[in-house]
Image (cartoon, rainbow, N blue to C red; front, top):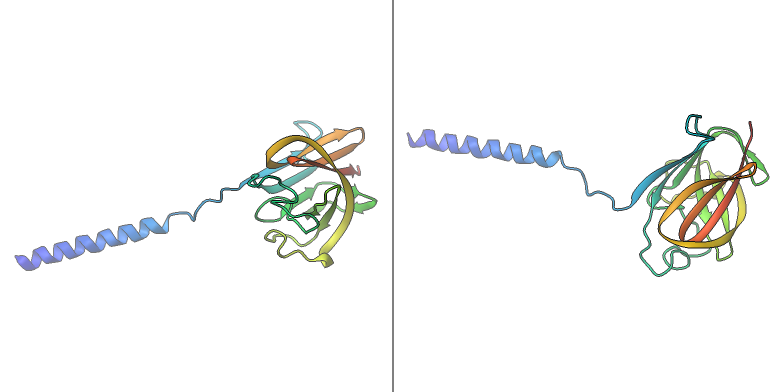
Length: 183
């Protein structure tokens, strides 16, 4: 009789251990506190997209975003975590270069008065750690402007006459990247 009770206890403990191990296997790793976002530009709500940006949205943690949290004159992933990816659905004039429709990584080198904007063909990379200048497709320099303070980095689009501006915004810094899509 005692032997049967011990066997039941052992089987019960073994089943509980299996359940606990199986339950822990279903857990997710810690969630990243940095939000990710996707921003599209379309001519209107029913037309197909012209450009899409996928990026991480860092939060302002220091006094200033640029020159403090993100150093000046160093390669930046233009967001948080994985490098920011831009998909052009049409060929685009980027600076004075024609860029074929496709997906590129958006890398920047922030400066106090102007930023260097880089399109790279090196996809699926973590931040700027794997940045390789040999994969650069195009580079332009754009001026910095000031606006109201934003605590979370954001990318949006603004139409100005025949051009589309991709606007990078964080803290009180704004950078407008001109894009001229070829029909």
